[in-house]
Amino acid sequence: MLRLQILVDDGFFADLTELDRHATDLAALDANRRRRYIAWRLGLDHDILSDAMRQTELANWITHQVRV
Image (cartoon, rainbow, N blue to C red; front, side, top):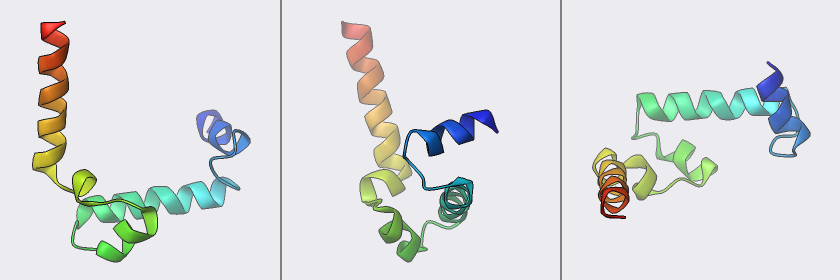
């Protein structure tokens, strides 16, 4: 719970209730990516919602780390 309070204290959320609502929305969107109204409310676009795109970004980052 202390880690959650830090997010409130640092100004990311007004209170723990708002943080909980945000986490609930993220879980609901993860369960069903077609709930576009949640994605819109959270400001998330295709680059975040697409498993393939996220995995490509991760693979590109790993490739870059290995080359450096």
